[in-house]
Length: 193
Image (cartoon, rainbow, N blue to C red; front, side, top):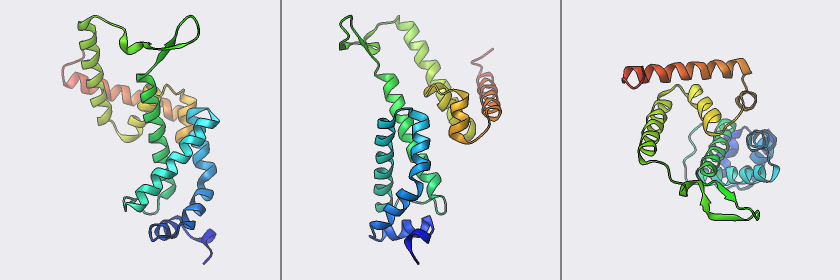
């Protein structure tokens, strides 16, 4: 059977057994879909290309290490890798914002991390943030994914709908239920009136 007619699973197995050309077929087969997904999230072609390469490098390492377990769902698995890489990138970016000075130069010490806030505010913010993150982890997968995309990645509901393949109304509804569920958990733990 010619490689282009083989299933994703057959190609993954061939690659795991040492046939390097099998991964090339998988990359070509899913390139447009994965790259489009990444580009929709990052909105920068150069950055999207970097993430695309990083995604397949990570996938190659995982397959070679015998960690690929999603039989029959290769494209979902690879898309999840890409999505997680983008989320991790944006999380890091939010934590390392630098500001330019009057000359347009970036100053390492002119960073949001070095700004002081009252100790009480800092403690309350960290406790509240940690508690909410714990509640978000308890949400159903679809709601959790939407909250991460909306709150941590600052994506619009249109971008979320396009990225997840659902309608805007469905995305809005999931966010509404996520908020309701978080409030319910807070009430149960007496953290919210």
